[in-house]
Amino acid sequence: MNDNNNKPLIYKVLMHIVVWAFLLCLPILLSIHNDFNFMAIVEHWWTATFLYAIIFYANYLAMIDKLFFGKQKVVFFLINLLLLFILSCTDLTLKTVFFHKGWQPRNPMNFICWEMFSQILPLVMAIAIRIYEHWQEVERKHQERESEQLQTELKHLEYQIQPHFFFNSLNNIYSLVDISPERAKETIHSLSKLMRYLLYETNSPQVSLEGEINFMTKYIELMKLRTAATTIVEYHFPENTNGIEVAPLMFISLIENSFKHGILPQGKSELTFNMELKGRKITFETQNPYFKPVSDNLSGSSSIGLENIRRRLNLIYPNKSEFYTKIENGKFITYLSIDV
Image (cartoon, rainbow, N blue to C red; front, side, top):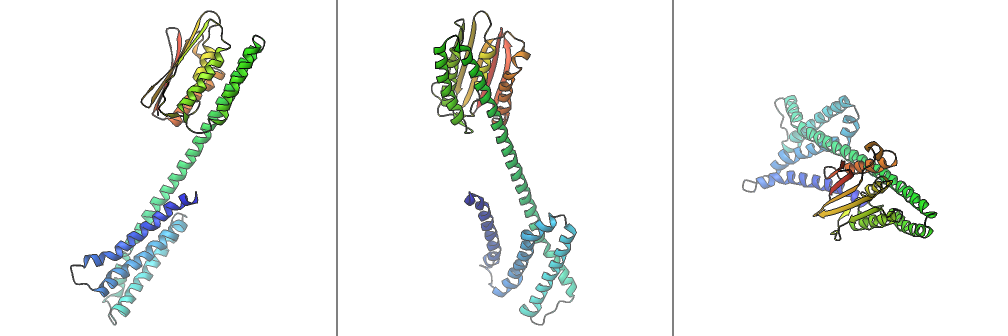
């Protein structure tokens, strides 16, 4: 983890080294085909580059963060004005004492003012770079907070599914205890397998579509144990999932709602569940008899499942999913597609 955190810093240091090395080598490269004058390069290029580096890093490493971002901009500009003046005087001293002994400019103050003006460029560059890096850091932290909030909300939505699913399954078992104890035992055994999947296999952001299909198949067979002979349940799932992964528990709420709200009190009921896989696009459709107002179908505990699906699709598959419900020919139909 620490190595990963240090990588951006290492890249940044290397970039600075490369840039300054290029600036130092540039006059040598330009003078290859001309008369090479080492002292002239030192005086006119390397000295200025060294002074520029002092201005740049004094601001980049310290003053911009402490003063400019610290809402002390007046102090920041006054200190930089003093720094520019000192470095300009230093440049004048080097020229008059070291490079050209005894030489004096006609107007020293004009020389110093011109030097100060020329040294504004590294100051502006330091401010621009730090503002950009500061913006990047703020944006990164904002994205991290959004990601943490997203993961927290997704976990909350998943935790809503599990108790809801368990509650419905216990109701199924309760209804079978007096009617058929043997079937109730089978139901408990099947439920234990389903709960094992819920507890241990769905902790990852993505699970295999094959695992989800096995889970849904077991659940449908479990629910069929308590349905009457007048209820026909049909389901079709793809046999080959091509290793595709999806967010866990994305389809189970639709199946739950069909069993809970789609079986007629009297007469024949048909429930169908169809999943198709075309490339990397998954489509899942459920159909069951419609015999209640939509407000009832979407009220109470059933609304948890449908609203949960809508919210999770918006979070996990934005602009890559479609979900709607409709009533057609006396059937309540749900349609869900995900492009993974």
